[in-house]
Image (tube, rainbow, N blue to C red; front, side, top):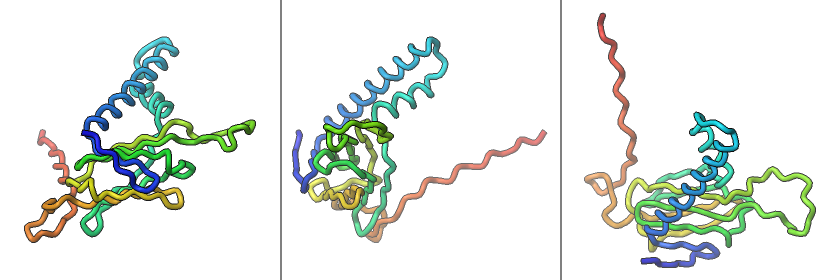
Length: 180
C-alpha cells in the first residue's frame, strides 16, 4: 500500500516496502562502488575503508537531531542549499527516510572553476523510539533546516501514569578483574 501525501512542497509517502527497497538500492550502489575501489587498488584487505569511501561518494549522510517534545518526535536535519521540492520523506509508524537531490550549480550555464559542495544525494534513515501517527506528520523547511514533527501514535506512552518518559540505554556492566 503506497499512500502519497503532500505536505507543502514536500512529498510524504507511507510505504514500508518502499523504504526497504530504497535502502537496499543504496546499499547495492555502495557495495558496487566499494568493489570498484578495491579493484582499482589491486588488492584486498581494506574493506571497511573502501566501504566508507564508497558511501561518501554515493550518498551524503547529514547529521540529525531526534528529540521528543509534547507528545511528538522532532527530527531536524540540515538541508542548506537543497530545494524543498527535491526533498522526499518516506515514513512508517516506526521509521523515517529522508532523501533529496543535493547541490546543483546555479545558474546551470555558469562555468564552474571550483566546487567543494557534495553533489551526492542526501540520504538518511532513522527509527523512532515509539510508534508515530503518520497521518499527522508535518514537514517544513526554514533557514536550511528540515523539521519533521511526528506525533506519537495513540496509546504510545511509556509510563503507567500516561506520561512519556525518555528511554536511556542500560549501563554497561564493568569488567571484573580476575584475581591471580
